[in-house]
Length: 322
Image (cartoon, rainbow, N blue to C red; front, side, top):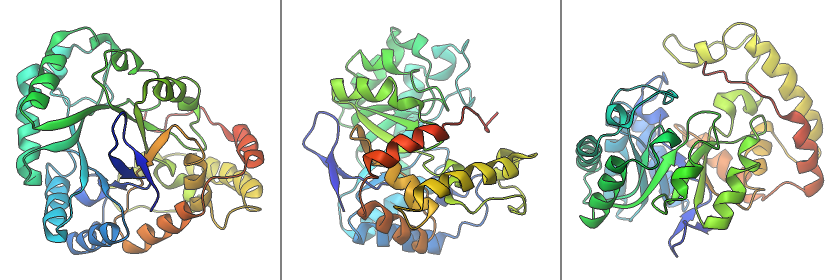
């Protein structure tokens, strides 16, 4: 497993991380705890040490599973979690106020709740689960960050950037208090490479990539006939004629990538690790077969420079979360 340095430290985290939203069972239907634990343990055995969870993933259930897997494995992992916004609004509206979203005492209280779920004394990386750069120069979030670091409860702080808003966090990064950004980046959404990646390279801020498969679109397995279980958020994400449009676009991508890759999923992951600014990519992996497939894809390394140039033609300015 290829390891990369985290931010300004000598700590190394796995280039393939483990996205833990799905195992929390919130909005993803079909997760089984026994299967999730089996997959978590296999990931650790394969050399993955970076696990990204959040308090809202199953109201702490995902954190609990990750904490149990760590204790059972006997290995020390690099665990990231997230403080949910107090108003529970995703993404942060442009007019959102910090006191309604991340007041100091609330940040501390929720971090301590995550620590209990994980059964840990500290969290390696705690992230704000939404963000608005208008809050950059306010004191509450800064005081909470500094206190939790001073008390040894959080080692590093990051921002989980609002969906499709990759520049909304750069101002906070200029304070020196932010060690990482988590951002959507994939073959469709290439915008982070324009400003965010260069900023992070210059300032030694780590980049964690979420949604590498665009919630499944870039696996090549979604088309007009695809059905999701009742209650699965993807029924809304791929509503209307979106499945048909996805299929047409993915077919076009496949025509370009099949000369170098064995599957669309492989192409999607290898595209992401082709960017040196990226520290880790965190696909959700509830099943062992998907974990092993992702490991195999990552092991093949970056795409060729020629293919990367071709991928620029597949940018798609859309937001299916709306």
